[in-house]
Length: 182
Image 1: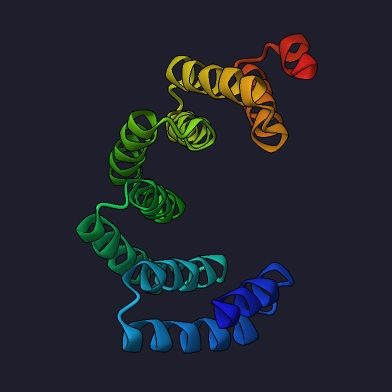
Image 2: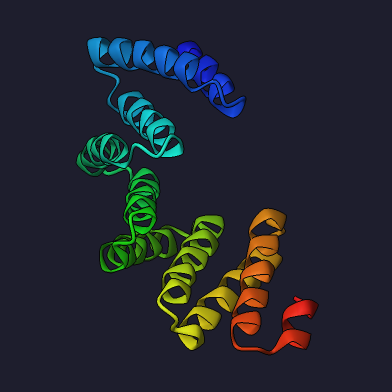
């Protein structure tokens, strides 16, 4: 756990090489002692580093390993997180159909377990897929749902993102007054 936390600290500072070194050490120990939950966490964190570096193939591999462990353990929250992360990889690569599928699976789990913050995040991500495809009506609906949840639970980061995304929709449609308000 300490090695994992040190790795996350370096990751937060953008020092990916150092972060990766500590996370790989954490992973090795967790595998050695049979800490499956910790192993899934370390795999997920390593995937995040590769994703941040644009190494999507490597990130996807780590996220998929984390997903398999979390599913085997019945860790629904972790599963929802892993599905969302896999969706983000596909989205970054422009594979919107695959991204949408993973985001929708993540959303279903997050709704099932009552993870309102995760639900708002998944809704925002689904909206972004429709936005990227020019399906503004669909995107707006998801962004508005995300906004309502984020306001309800006080998640200011997702609230800001949702407001910005809604403004972007109106801007794309030439409704500049509406866009500016958001």
